[in-house]
Image (cartoon, rainbow, N blue to C red; front, side):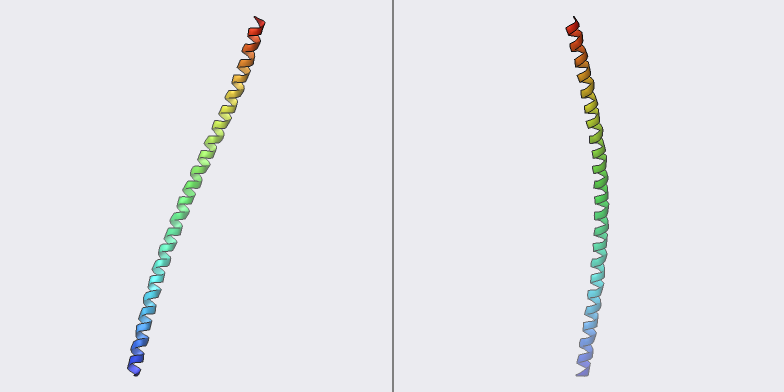
Length: 83
């Protein structure tokens, strides 16, 4: 009977060790996936920032161009009236 108990305890220890090893592997995989996700997020945040800067530059260019066209139109209208 004692031998059966010892065998059962040994089996439980082995299973426990196997589960611990499996948990360590899963934790390692999880940590790796988290790190990859952080890198992907950082990449996308960088892309978003660059695109926002590009949008700001284009909006400024558009605004400046509109102001230039408005001034030219006003100048031309004044010149036409003077004729």
